Length: 166
Image 1 (cartoon, rainbow, N blue to C red):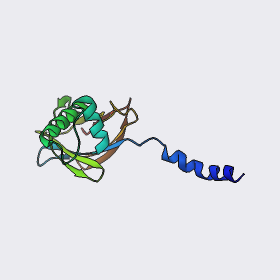
Image 2: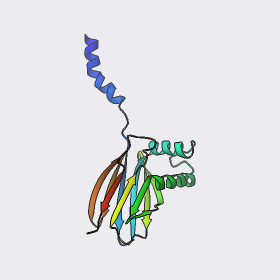
Image 3: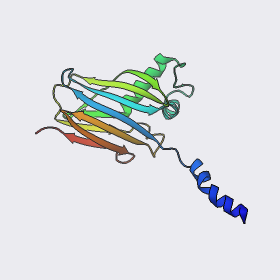
Image 4: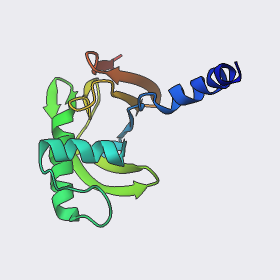
C-alpha cells in the first residue's frame, strides 16, 4: 500500500520530467522613421538553432562562441532570410543580419531592412525553426508609428497582415 501511495505522489513529478520541450522564439520589430528602416531583434534557443542549421546546412556546425563565426554568420543570414519573410507595401523585402550575441540559453540576432520611407501595410511570415520543430511558436512584437501589436505565429498560421494606412 505504501508503494502505491509513493507512486501516486511521485507520478506527477515523473510525468513533468518527461514532458515535451517548449519551442518558442521572440522577435521585436520596430520601424525607425529617422533611420528609414525596420529593425529586428530575434531570440532563438542555442540548441534549437544549432539543430536546424545542422539539419539544413552543415552537420558539423556548432552554435557558440568557439565556432567559426564567419561560417555561422553565413548560415544564420541564409536561414533568417528564408524563414523570416517581410513584405512591405506589397513588395517583398530582403533583411540583412547585422550581428548576433550569445546570452544565457539563446542567441540574439540583430537584423534590419533599410530604405523604408513609409509603412502602409506589412505582411510578416515567420516560420523560424518550424521546419524542424512543428510545435514551434514564434512571438512577434511590433512597434510602428507608436502602435504596438503582439502576434503569436505557429505552424499552419505563421503569417500576419498589419495595416497602418489611415
